[in-house]
Image 1 (cartoon, rainbow, N blue to C red):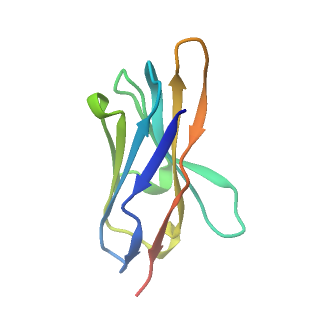
Image 2 (image 1 turned 90 degrees about the vertical axis):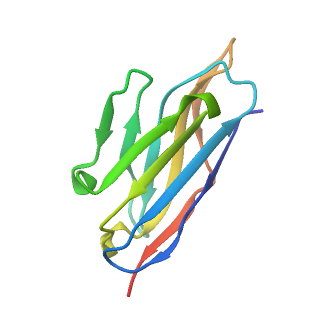
Length: 119
């Protein structure tokens, strides 16, 4: 059974940095794309960043220049380096992966990790 496990959230002051990690496990043939979404209280879940196997990135305008997505394809993992954090970045961050299991494929979500930016 496929699982996505996230880590790295926490409390940070404005201007600080955090690094989120997500690892996929299970009967995985391939993953494409892999990325991050976030959901603030009372709001919808929105795209933060995604990265394809071909190296194509897609960032939300609000995080461009501050966040960097990367992947370790050998470990089925994705990372999000977040710099210059702002209070409006506060949200639950979810890892997302479209996973090919051989005879089926589909989108999977992690359990979410809380990021709080506050002084």
